[in-house]
Structure formats: structure tokens, C-alpha cells
Amino acid sequence: MLDAMIRARSVAIVGASQQKTETGGDKLGTVALNYLLAHNYPGKVYPVNPKETEIRGLACYPSVKDIPDDIDLALIAVPAKASVAVMKDCGVKGVKTAIVLASGFSEAGEPELEADLIAAAKEGGVRFCGPNTNGMISIANDMVCCTSMVCAMPRFNKGDIAFLTQSGAVGGSMLGTGNEEQGGFSHWISVGNEADLQVADYLDYLADDADTKVVALFIEGIRDPGKFTRACAKAAQAGKPVVVYKIGLSEVSAAAAASHTGAMVGSDAVFDAVCRKYGVVRVDDAADLLPTAITFSRLLDKLPKGPRMGLIGPSGGICGVCADECHRFGLDVPELPQSAQETLKQFIPPFGALRNPIDVTQQIRSSPTGYQDTIRTVLEQDTIDGVFLLVTMVGEPRASFYCDIFTEAARATGKPVIIAWTGAQSLAAQAIPQIKRNQMPLYFSARGAVRAMRALLDYRRFLDARGEDNR
Image (cartoon, rainbow, N blue to C red; front, top):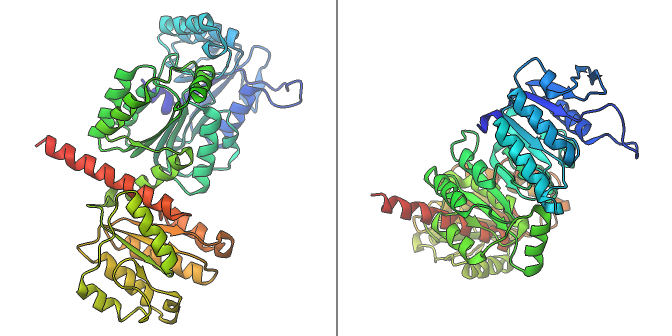
């Protein structure tokens, strides 16, 4: 059923128009049509408007019922009260799925109107997203059925992260930032009021989706806890990490969620228990949601086997900061074996630190291969499960040199490597974008890097425990 929406081969856009709004802008349906065409949708497109015969060179039809071909997806971009009649037309036509953009339903104190919309969809056998949604983007299928300003970006990076959000505005902002960070996405769905399809339905679908390896959720509330729990269990069984940020810890945010989508936020303690049981990775800062999902996408095949971390940096200060963060998040910083320390003496000045953390000092730049040899030596140790590469102040061209050697070292190992770059980014104007393009996990604080590594370890332990339970 969701294939007809996420992999739609034909889209009707109801409400597209050549007329402008009173302020001179494009109407919502026209915005959606323009974005769909701009992102090179390969399927068939059918504008629907009884006052038009042609839009953007495409034949325009008076109603959905007048379209001569089968329709997988209808994007309904008309006011709330008119949406019900359009949904009835979709049912008569045999449209499989729909997206209802309009606000003005249960979230605005109009539950009866939303009930009418649901009844019309059920009668016609139409499954729908929304209402009160920005739409959806299937990056994997070059299909942008969405009105969020994020679609003004010229392209989205294709990848394996699916992002479900109960806030279209916040979710769009996050997608834009994640795209700039070189994260790769399969699908983005603004679920709206979830009058029909819920977060759990999409998550259940994505657990089987070949284009998706990681799922990110921005959650305000769960409508059907049982269905959501079953979807989390299915994702866990498929080995697909689910990373979630959930609002509603305070009374104020809970009230905001209720007024926004009409969702009941529910018990945070119960939600936390579900996360622990099914390996859902919960972040407590909205800004960490997509960076954590991106890190999982890049390191899912290199999860740490244990908590033992190697710390390598050019400053004793940043090494100490990272060591404290490891302590805070329950990661170990073991002393390296004596044999490894003897090897490191060949590369590191005598006033450096060899035990772990490893302070290569600024003098490492006097050796053409000393930094590379140090990183390789640490990664080769059986007593090390992952490595943090710490950077303070460095400019070009040295910054680009770091980019090259860090990328080479990370690609040559089966252990997770995360960069914490704490110096001025403007001095590394070439290196930092290149690190992102090279798909290296990059954080701009030691805490962010350590927190991400801890999440990877927790998921590894969840998988290990599940494997033992299944034996």
C-alpha cells in the first residue's frame, strides 16, 4: 500500500493554479507542482483545477475523476473543507493514496471535519498522509511531493537515512541542515495529524525498505503505542537503528504538541522503556538527531565491540577534555600496551604522551608520516575498540593534510573512527567540507563525538544481547 505513495508512478496535484495569491505568490498546489518538476520526477504528473486547462505545459483536468489514467498518489492542496470532497473524488477514481496538506482539522478544534475526511477516505479505500502536513519527499525515487522551503535546495543527497517528523517546519529545517552536512537520505515524511497513516505505519514499511538502513524520528506523541512498539520491534529485527528525539518532557512542550497535531504526548517513562527494549537510540537534544543518524549510517558496519577508546590529538588539553567526556559517558581510555608505546616513540617527540590519550604535540608536523603511523598503530591494538581523532587550531594546507590522512586511516580499519574538530572552521575552509564529502563522522566538540560513539556502543550491545536471546 505505501509503495503507491512512496514509489508513486503517477501524481495528481489538486489545487495547482496559474493564478497568484493576494500577496503575489504561488498558491500551495503550484508550489508543490513546481518542486515536483524541479527535482526531475520521472513519473506522470496531472494538475487538477476546474478553472485551468494547462499548467506548466501539462494538461490540467477539472477533477481527479476526469484523469484518463490510473493514479497512485493525489496531493490535495485545497482548503480543509474542500479536501473532503476531493477525497471522495479520489475514492471514486480509485486513487490508491493521498497527501492532505491543509490545516484546520483536529489541531484547530475541528475534529468533526477530520472525521469526515477519514470517513471519505475509508469509503473510497484511500490511505492518506496528513492532514496538516508539508508532504513527503522520496529522495530515492526523485519524488518531491512537498511544500516545505527545504525543497528549494537544488538537490538532495541520496543515501540510506529515512526521516519521519511530526513537525513539518522543524523537520524541513533539519533535513536542510543534514543535507548540507552531506548526510544521505532515502525518504522524508511530514506525517501531520496522522488521521490515517501514523508514524508506526511508515516505520513498519521502512523496516522492509531496501533503500533505508537508518530511521530518524522527530516525535511529539504516539497515537497507537501498541502499533508503534510492534514497528520498533520489526526495525530491530531487521537490524535497522531507529534514532529518536521526542518532545513533551515539560508541560509547556506537551501542550504545544497537542495544539500542533492534536497528539497525546503520553508517559515519557513508558516511551523510554520501549526505547531500551527495542534498541531505539534516544537523543536528548534535537540538534543531535540527524548527526547521530548520519553517524549510524556511516558506521553501522563498524560498531565498536567494546568501550575501550583511543584518543589521539596534538594537545594535552583537548586530550584531557575528551578523556573527561569518555568518563562522563561510560567509555574507557585504557593504557596502551608497552609494545605499542615503544612503537609510538619512533613517531612522537619525547615530550609527547604515549600511554593514552596520545598527545602527538604540534611537533608531529616535522615528521611526514608520524601522524599516520601513530593512528595506524593505535587502531591495530586489540585493546582498542574505537578511536577519536582530536583537532584544535589548524589551518590550510595542514588542515587538508589531516583530512587526507584521517580518511585513509578510517577506510583502512574495521573500527569506528570519529573526528572532534574544535578549532576555527574558517581556517579549514577546504578540509572540513571535504571530510563531510568523504563520509567521515565529524563533530565540533569532544562531547558530541563521545556521545555519538556511546550511541554506537549501546546499539552494538543491544544487537549482541538480542543475538544471545535468539540462540
